[in-house]
Picture: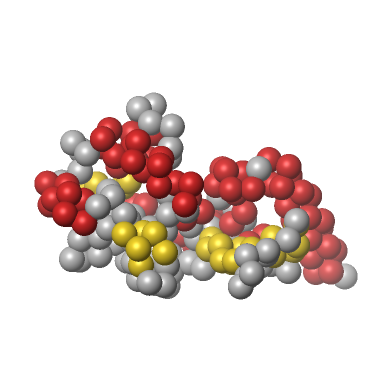
Length: 200
């Protein structure tokens, strides 16, 4: 366990390797799950500002869902989440002719049309963050979906990319650059210690 400023990080975050392989998983993390994407309270305003930009790009069925249900809804277990279609697909997802699922917000962000990339919970995947009961501690765990993420685990191992490196941008977005730099230093020492133990 790694502890930085009351953030408890599972060892798997630095020990395991992961790189999304979209050609194999086809972005199905946008459709598989118990609910839509979790939204932090401070993201609700960002969602409201970004939606008019992407509204014209999402399917008509998704626009109708948003119009009837709202930009987000309150899930009894997961809090504020994005609406989903009957098959579980996020209302803000785009699907191309090959079946590849992508995020309309991320597309607009990459095209420099909006400043909000996508829900942080999506950006952090395959990491999941939870809070202690009194909300004074956070827990960061590595939770890939099996078998959906098997290709990403294989590609990460092939490319030798630790999970925390794969989600670098998202971790900095959540905790800041100083936090991430400390995590990198701890991870480097961890790997050095592991290598030495293996050598002996």
